[in-house]
Image (tube, rainbow, N blue to C red; front, side, top):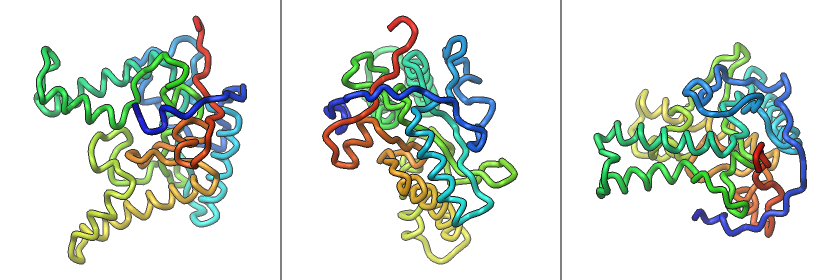
Length: 240
């Protein structure tokens, strides 16, 4: 359970919309390339109507300060089957990285599961606790230049560990003497801060552990804003 899991949901029924051309899509889609089971016609580049509108507002705000920058969308709506696939993929990858076996319980496996669980929501079928991306309220994104190439923000999207905390490189810089390494940390932090400022100005809430994850209208957003209700629940899928 996350701290926002108890927030009630009163879905307002807004539809999912395809992202407009003004918003850059990072292609090929990363999870589709891994074989994630989206199914026919299930575009990952869709979000609720109100979220799309606010993304455009965030990009306009960003470009007032940085005319050559734009938002770059990594991932948006995610059906439960894809959430399940990606959680399993993340566990496998972390087990391989740390040399941990998934066969049989162990403290090392428990540690991997706990760390993955900080970043990946469980694929809950309970309508009271939907994964954020299944609601069409959450988006993973970064920054790109006007050439469409991603700017480095210090770590890949979906990296598991402290490097993904929004203020990680600020804390790193504070512990370093004046040096190229410190200046690079401050550049990365500055870009993360600019992304967050643009998104928050449009009303989004940032995930506490992920510099790339923002949402509007879901339980995380309601919890972060001190609101009593979320306005987006899980989007019904074929077979629901």
